[in-house]
Image 1 (cartoon, rainbow, N blue to C red):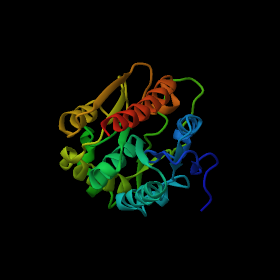
Image 2: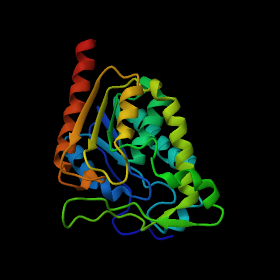
Image 3: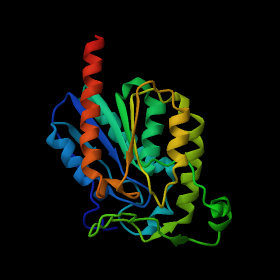
Length: 255
């Protein structure tokens, strides 16, 4: 299947001191993180952003995948970064934040820190509980992509939400929520004040349950869900570079 223009995975080989894994969101693509990746690369970091299985082609492909496929893709990239870089950070948008949390839970202090932008671990949508039943008869529902406040910006994402894939995401949320105390790495969490896709309770759940001692919360006042393409994008980019450098410096001081 042909990958949509702009949806391709990207990478940059920079310093072996810092590696950064970027994880895109549900029904989205690396296109939503490309500018963020470029900023991290300009800072001298090695950057990897894979295209998750079932994404970036047609929405029907997602219904043939599950959360284990998406997690396997980012896990493979993480293992490669761990082999080549001294410190590795994991960053994610939306479901990419969910995957980042799961990596943090599995790999512990092998991950130096995590950056989450509007991460998801649940939904308050009343119809979500009917997902497993709907998946048997309804392949897709209207999409959730392109929630951007900034005029002229468009997210490369499916216009339909694959129902079976959404049900699988719900299973990942349940696992991640249960293991949030296992997240002990330094954490930078940036979330939009107005988000039409991921409710504020998601960030509240994460902040209230993680085991991290070094936690920074940043409110994004002028962006919707896809904040990495929105008015607060530069703030996200700058704060993430500052976060990486501060964690690195703290590690040096500790030794």
